[in-house]
Amino acid sequence: MQMYDLIMKKKRGLALSEEEIHYLVSGYTNGEIKDYQMSAFLMAVCFQGMNEQETFALTMNMRDSGRILDLSGISGVKVDKHSTGGVGDKTTFVLLAVIASLGVPVAKMSGRGLGHTGGTIDKFDCFEGFSTELTTEEFTEKVNRHYIAVAGQSGELAPADKKMYALRDVTGTVDEISLIASSIMSKKLAAGCDAIVLDVTYGQGAFMKTKEDAEKLAALMVKIGKSAGKKMSAVITSMCEPLGYSVGNALEVIEAIEALKGNAPKDLMEVVFALGEQMLLLAGRAKERNEARKLMEEAIASGAALEKLKELVVSQGGNPACIDVPELFPTAPHQTDILSEKEGYVTDLDALAVGLASMHLGGGRAAKEDGIDLSVGVVLRKKCGDYVKKGDVLAQVHSRESHPQEVIRSIKEAYTIRTENIKKEPVIYRIICG
Ligand code: URA
Image 1 (cartoon, helix red, strand yellow):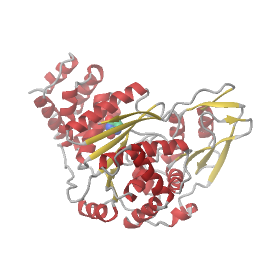
Image 2 (tube, rainbow, N blue to C red):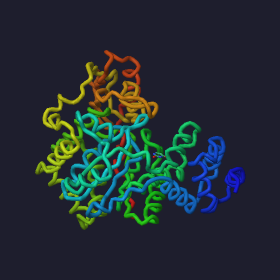
Image 3 (tube, helix red, strand yellow):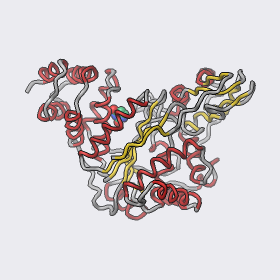
Image 4 (cartoon, protein in one colour):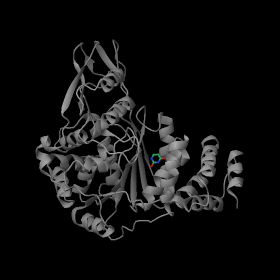
């Protein structure tokens, strides 16, 4: 078999066989197939796409390129949750505590944030001493004992995807649905859970810009997961504006802790509950959505979910004191209010612009190796649908540098204020049950 022939075949819009995809993935992983050939192939996929059989074969070959976690030592149905990325998205942080407090094992492998979207591991780094470097034995023991553990995604999982994603990132070949679906699902399948709930976001701040594309991606990932023998659900959610009010690691953690204390923004809880319902249904902990919702509301109202977060932080070596005293979290030296220069309704709040602003403050990584500042970010005071007067505070920037002009300008530009209000998009667009 020759890589040249496979590139030509895809260029002409023909489907590759299972054997050809195996050759492609194994050859690229072991270095026999070069970056320039793989780049040409990936670009051909961007123009011609892949059918469902090809996408499934690509996923399984990438999954099998490394280690597959064996979680059989953990009793119960292990449910994982994945988001395709958003701005201000702290749902995982809230959900982990709520679901584990209901006795459903949550074995969470997670990554660090890249670009304008945040990562769950970065949020746990806000707790001094918290370690996400766990051996499989430690991970298993902690989930069995506490129903929850959080570990950094091991480089041993799906190494073919790691290499291919790095190449896609620099060759303009990220935004193709079958490549995204196979990339995400190869890692999720290698992480070894029994059930997976996907949060597929759409809008300015998301990979998928339209509801229709998000729906296609969600349906494809659900199908791949089911064909691989997993229980699957997907919730399609809007990322037209940031979720909740805080963007930036420590700021988001503080908002998530407030949510566990029962003081959450409505949009955040809508997404938390929609995803949590699916997690509890797939785990067999609830029989229908209303029952699942009630269980979660009780877990928050009784303080059980907050206690579970404290238990998790202590079990992984972190200092839980900041859960009760948020001032102990990393805090930026400067806070600057951004004032409205107009009167009217906020009709748009560009999530991507807010995410990029937080990244430019040092709260996100432009490249994987970059460090981040956990303290910086943006706290929104007004969101879509709100009425503002001239001089009202639109948002507050938390920064290391005093008065960061560029960021202040881009946050101002992220707001559209008009005299007429518009109908707000619902946060939950659709739920796809497997
Ligand atoms: N996240 C991934 O892991 N892979 C993609 O291709 C896109 C988003």
